[in-house]
Image (cartoon, rainbow, N blue to C red; front, top):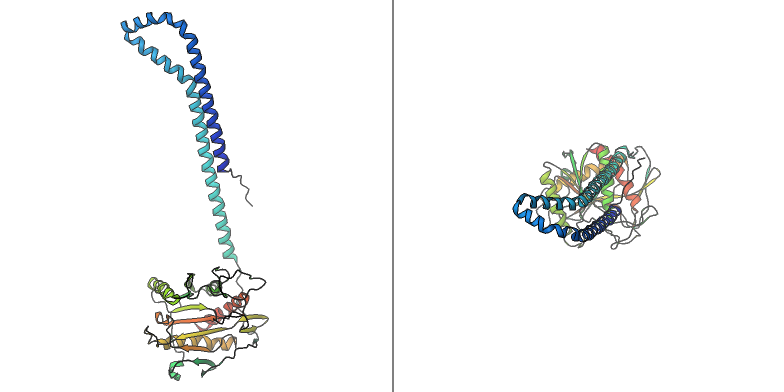
Amino acid sequence: MINMAVISLKDIIKYLIKFFIGICAIIAIMKYSVGVKKNIEQSKVLKENSLIACLDTTIPGIQSMNNEEEKKEDNISIEPLKLALGLELEMLSSVIKQETKNENIVENVTENIAESKEKNEVIEKAKTGVKTEVQSSKVPNKYTTQYNGVKIKNETNYKLTKEILTPNIKVNSDKIVIFHTHSSESYTSSEKYKYKATGNFRTTDKNYSVIRVGRELEKQLKSYKYEVIHNETLHDYPSYTGSYSNSLKTVTKILKDNKNTDIVIDLHRDAIGDNTYAPTVKIGDEYAAQLMFVIGGNGSKTKHENWSQNLKFAVKIQEKANEMYPGLFKPIILRYASYNQQVAKAAVIIEVGATGNTLDQALASMKYLAKVMDEAL
């Protein structure tokens, strides 16, 4: 514990003003006293004036001597006050410097404590070999294609051959980018995470939105020694329209500054807008929100001819997830829209739960996702 006496700057200024007024009053009184004294003595020296004037004319040096004496007489009363005021100002300057120094010390100590806390934080990693059980849901998990247990709901007319689906893809995993096109998506409030909604299951408070889920994934991946770039820009606020255009600018800039980055995750929450849908899987004794890959195709204005690379990456991760935590992922959805996934070899959308899930459940999912990714990569 550090005890420090911090002097209020406001109190110092008040003290200085009072001191200055006192000094001015003393100077005024002393000047008045000097004036009265001069008037009394004026009559005494009046007789001598004619003689002094005569001597001044005859001997010019005497006049300058007399003027110097008058200046000294005034300075005798003023100089000590100037000295005192100077000392007070010097003391005030010293106090202000000390206060600033104390504030810097407090700030540095706070930063060091926060940094130390972050370094010493124990990250709970996912356990393996535990029982998993998908919880019942009102929304059935439909699919059209299967590859080695990985289910895919193909909403395009693309023919998904074995060659397309085989996850024989190698990616550079030195850096992983996480961002959020729909940054203000949020969840059902829980006892631990209650928040003020900015819209329908939306909030600009990053501590309660899908951005908070991104922070958890970042923390978990870093615990496996991956370098993670997590961008927390709000791309869907104040206007939801143009979210993908906004996020494209962000991710393009990130990839320009981080060459040869393959893995780009756009973290979302399922858009179903009520609290009746909460896709959940029980892993051990913990309830986690189910995850879902959304893969974009080459059916929009934006050319995305290498969409199958993104799909291969999703199949690779989900194949490992089915092995470790069956039911963690819902079927992959393949659509025509590119969803900005033309930017990288392994660019994907991952939807974490839905509006009916709590933030607690969404955060729990991230440790299992990070574990799966580490095993698959």
